[in-house]
Image (cartoon, rainbow, N blue to C red; front, side, top):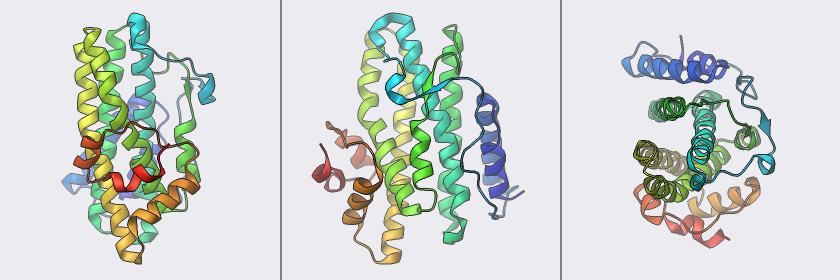
Length: 263
């Protein structure tokens, strides 16, 4: 099996928990050396998905409020589980889709590790949902997250600019407030899970920044200007303040990139 074969297996698994568990196994096989070759193959436009949850336009998905007791916390964790499921596929997709770029092996190491992290996050959140009497798929979700993958399917610069350096960086901004609200609701289990996710996401943003910088240096492009142009061209939303500058700086992602073009 090659790394691309492994990615295709994960991407082609529709059951969410099976996708996450198999992703963890495949990551172990990569890092142990049992999967050694990178390989190459056509990558599907979309990953396999379970029948549930029902996918809606983002504006139609009910708002989630932690203050609404257990149902509110379930809605929040379900939404985060959906993000993590998409993140598993995004990590495998970037590891397999851009093999023609002839990148160093460390590039693949980074994104397999991200896939493993996101799989661990999904299982952790789904376990908590099950303890609460729910599960992933019980509530509606939206498909907006995969739009960024489709828009950057032929553009590694764009993929790195948008997925880790906009979408995952946004997670660094909003997660600390969620953690505090969960603590106020005396849900220490969920708060601790979100702290793990936040800390791991710093390393994911750092990976995105590292490889975006690598590409810019390789091609002789100005890093900040190139990133800003890509965001303004490819990202449909806006960069929202306030930013978690401390966590972004820990990822090596300075305000010189995002502050000048933020709303």
